[in-house]
Amino acid sequence: MPNCRLWKRAIPLRRGAYLKKAISADPTNGEATQLLGLSYYRGGHPADAIPLLEKIQGWYPRANADASYVLGVCYIQTKDYPQARKAFGKMFEVPPDSAASYLFTAQMLLRQEFDPVAEEYAQKAAALDPKLPLAHYLLGELYIYKSRIPEAIAEFQKELAINPAHAATYYKLADAYSRIQKYEDAQHSLQRSICGGDLFEAGRNHGPQQSHDPPSARPGVPRYGEERRSRERAEVGGTTANQTKSSVARWIYKAAA
Image 1 (cartoon, one colour):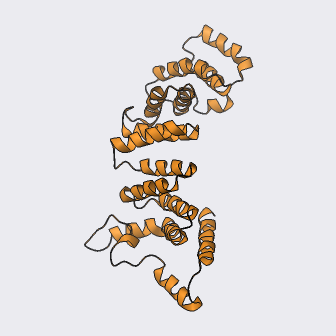
Image 2 (image 1 turned 90 degrees about the vertical axis):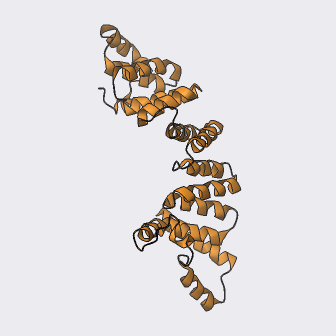
């Protein structure tokens, strides 16, 4: 099997003649075939790369992850999205028409800045499997990127309903709240992004009753940091919007560190 890292040192196209000679001498030379395909890709010729990379996929029972990735990207660049989904499905070993395959392809489409198709594929993934983790998270990220903040918040909340211990969703939700100046909600989400997952697991493993909600969302369980904030308000006579905004900024700095 060709080295999975060969694409990082793919030979420039001006030297492709040597690879073509090697392939002519031995049509089963997988390494030369893959290198030529990857060189076409890196040289900005995805349509020329596709048949060579497809040939590599047919020769080996298990997909070469790098070759499958590049093949999928080539199909995206040539706007053949169903074939891209098939390539990424093979890369991740999931059926091409599955919700997971749509989600993986949506992530790749977003990386390549094919936003409308990425949104369509992420929505398809969520429709095929409403409980699929990270589908709503990806939609939320996409909506934040497009400054569609209310839609982003709704998607992050849907993600937390099925994936309540996912810290990154809390962090992105805090970002969305801060963009519409809901700093208290942003601070709560940031706090949960840092320790909410641990609290969720602790809550699941103790006591006769188990809940799939984060601890701060359960009846009778104080919100994280609520007692501390109450003491702070008593000491300073209330928290102003500017103070809350500064607190959110500090939390963002800590989370990013």
